Image (cartoon, rainbow, N blue to C red; front, top):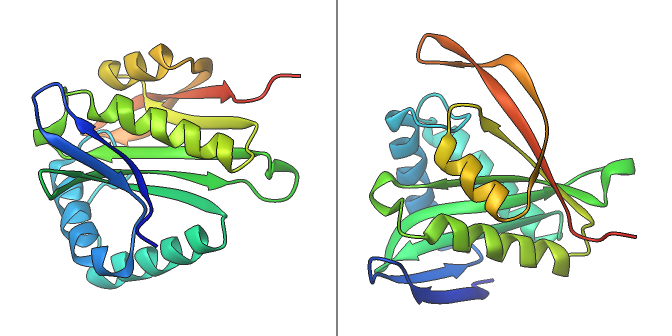
Length: 182
């Protein structure tokens, strides 16, 4: 597929490329999932996946992108896999909406890449014909919440104690962004 979504320079002067995935990206994705799982950061992945789990996920992801059920954007910085973002289209009565997920390697945070990745994801979701985007976020992840709100996401509410994280129960913030208003 290898559809280029965007290329630009980050706030730190790094060359950044956003593109759709291709089969040859598996090794990068697996290494990234292991790194993020080991970092134990603000993502739902609480531990590194097995190779089979990641292979199954990757195969399913490529199929869903091909069927236009999902958007998946890979972020490369200076040729290194830096992160990814996705929108999964809802099913049935929720086909007009999509749920978002995004993650970046720690080395590439705070240089505007996440914000640009979200903007690209929103544009791709509009092009896909979606009317509404939703996402959830750890209540304690202030940097991410700031980005989401800056991009127009609104809080729908918080589920107290929904996330088990480092021995504590953290609230899960639910946010939404209307793409089309009638």
